[in-house]
View (cartoon, rainbow, N blue to C red):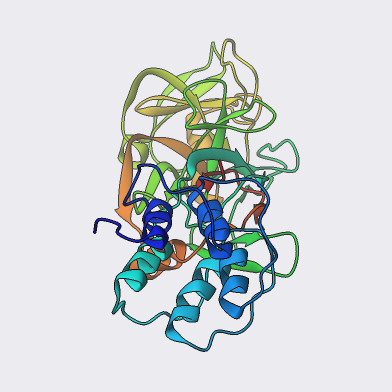
Length: 352
C-alpha cells in the first residue's frame, strides 16, 4: 500500500513497507510518529491526548499508557506494550498499524554454551537451537576388588532445563532420559569440549533437529575372552556384538571395575580401552587366567560405557519438541541452566 497522508508515510516507514523519506514533523503527533519511524531523534512535545500517550509510549519516549478502549487504541497499546488483542484491520491506518505489530524484529543470531549460560543481550524470542550433552563420572578409582558406580547426567530419568530473567519470570523444559545421558572423557575426537578443556564423546539431545543422538552405549561387560596376552598383562574380550567394530582407533571406556586412562601408550595395570572388535584389559594382577576372568564377568554385574562404531539417531517425542518450541529467552537478560550440570549449547536471538 502506497502512503498518501503524512501519518501513512510515518507508519509505512515504521512497518518496513516504505523506505523513502518522510516529511519533517509539524504536528504534535508527527514527532512521535517520526521517532517511531526512526527518522527523528530530537525534542518531542509532552503528550496531551490519550492517543498522544499511546504514540509517545510506542516511540519509546514515555512509559505510561492507559488501558485501550477504542479499536485504534488497541492497536497502539499492542505496539507500545507488545501484548494484547487487536481486531482484524478494517481501515488503511489499521492495516499499517497491524503491519508494525507483526513486523519481524531485526535480531542477531548468536550461540552460547556452558552448563549455566548467562545471556546479557537476549531478545524476547524463541530459541533457534538447543543441544544438551551427556557425561559420566566416578567418585574414585575402580578395581575388581573395589567397584565404583558410574554416574551419568540424567540418571534419575530426566533433566530439567530452566530459563529465567533473573527475577520472577522462568520456564522449565523437562527432558526424558530413561537411561541417563552418558559420555566418555577423551583427548580427541569429542563432540563437545567443556569449560575445563576436556573433550567428551557422549549422547546428545538436539532439539533443533528433533533427534536423540546416541554415540556411546551402556552395557554389561560380558562375552568371550578370545585372546590372552600374558606377556603384556592383558586380556581381550570380544564385544563386536555390543559396540560394533572400531578399527585403527583406541577409545577409552568407562567401567565400574577398571580405570580409564588416556592417552593409551603403555601397559598399565587395570587400564582398559576399546579397539577393533575387543576390549583390551590389563588385569593379570587380578586374574591369572582367562577362565578366571570369564567366571568373574559371569558372576558380577560389571557396567561398561563404550563408544559406538556408528551413532544411532532417533526422533524425539512430539510433546518434548512442542515444549521446546514454547521456550523463549527474556529481554535483555536470560539465564539458562539445568539440574544435572550437563553441558548445553543454545542458539538465540540477540538484541542488536
